[in-house]
Image (cartoon, rainbow, N blue to C red; front, top):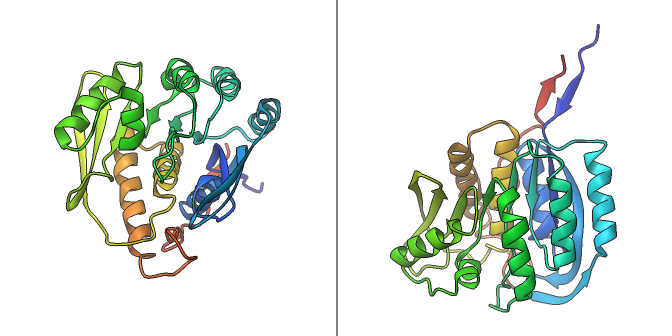
Length: 278
């Protein structure tokens, strides 16, 4: 009898980057590079390139719902990554579906602030995200700008990172990876907060590169991939941090566009992982 197999599957619910460096394009590249089969549900279309965003076109929430349901009912994902969720209606749609699948790990990268520092979502959407999506996510992965928006705190030191992370955890998170890439320091420092567990600190050397566009999307997607493979959260974060570090390192001398270029997602791609069906 011929053996049958399945792939490790990951769904991204996020916006599209026409320049290919961030959003679902970065997510799908990451899934493929790490041996996972990727699916997508688009929340928004952007007209952008390496120099910036020119326009955003929102996808109607009912159609976002249809995309997610179509995937969930046919190819149930082993993990879910969530990116750009910019309206309360989208929050409601996503939360309603996630509540039906409590066993699937969810990594939520709350895209709230543009690279320029411009705020991307309104206050009522932020409050809806905190109330409805934070409790459903296995892990949330904000950067310091987003953490500042969530807490109204200034974050310029490791001590202020700790204070902000503790404040966000009190909002009802299951786990928080606070990314410290914007700190003015020689090393990158990220902090993992979990209830009643000592804070984990992840350190790595900064790479002098103009090509870091999409690094946040890539990190959250990589964590989702490793969780989909059944790897424990702390180990999944370590592996994902290593992947992003190397993707930046191997892409730092490449010129793609006139602005901030992408990572090299395929510096060492895996084959699609096969799991035998029994």
